[in-house]
Length: 365
Ligand code: PLP
Image (cartoon, rainbow, N blue to C red; front, side, top):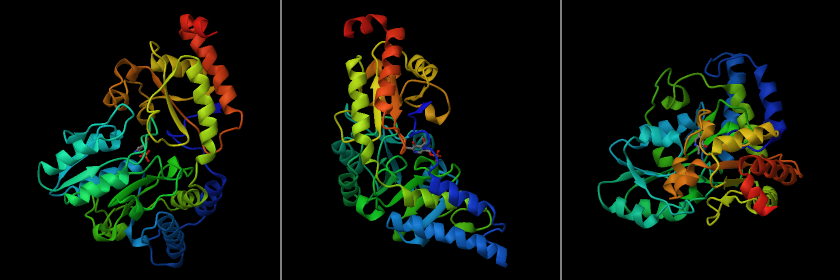
């Protein structure tokens, strides 16, 4: 099997596996005062310190959650209070769901946010909370965060960044990004699923919880934290941070697909090194995913990582790509992509095109 669906979930890193397994043997609720509780608390606070250091925030400004969906929802709940909400048109459903009918920042054909439109939205009303993702999960498009942050702050707005897909693939610092808060997820950077974090700037650190529960996480997120999962999360954060080695493999794979008639969606923008979005005009995305799966290659249709459903991509639709929004697959290389993955993908892709689009296969040989 060739696993090329890292943006859905990254393979577990060995460092994360070792930390997870070691922590599973520690009995104790980290909020109990006895020795067993203190041992679990030490693991939790060590993880907090080490993740906070990697993103250049204070440990006290990091709130552990069950994943990025919860971190996104907590940010919207806590930071939007009294503010208008403005969200990127290509955000993940974890933002678009809770955002409801909030104003959208349009994107260009490469998926880049239209900052003139953002400026107009910011100028048109009271202070806002703006949500703009660091990297798109379907195309890998990297948003101009520093310029967006500058605009937001000029208009008294806060900027919240869903950094799920770029965290672990490039070094990120909350302050350097210009964001006021940021969400990250363990399983998207090679840790176990079941943990994420909301990183807050010092001025916003005392947020109101969505679930007060027992007052854990300094009263910002009730519920007993998943200590072992969080230990694995921290180990994965320490082991990750650079995906640039994947760019040549991604480029080779993309070139092979282009030679077979694929259109690369988002190619005109700066992108994550591991991600490509390949549309095959005239061929439904779900048929492509199934054909590649039968050939042993795991990829996804644009939005499938959320629920297993295959539907037209709202990301490609927002980019103005018309029918291609239902004809594109996302190929996302994991941190441990094999050196021959481009050749293996090219062979499967060629067979897939021959089966699903015989006329094109004849034309391109
Ligand atoms: N945000 C983005 C950009 C994502 O790609 C995902 C997962 O696909 C999420 C949020 C949700 O993350 P989690 O699975 O940790 O809830």
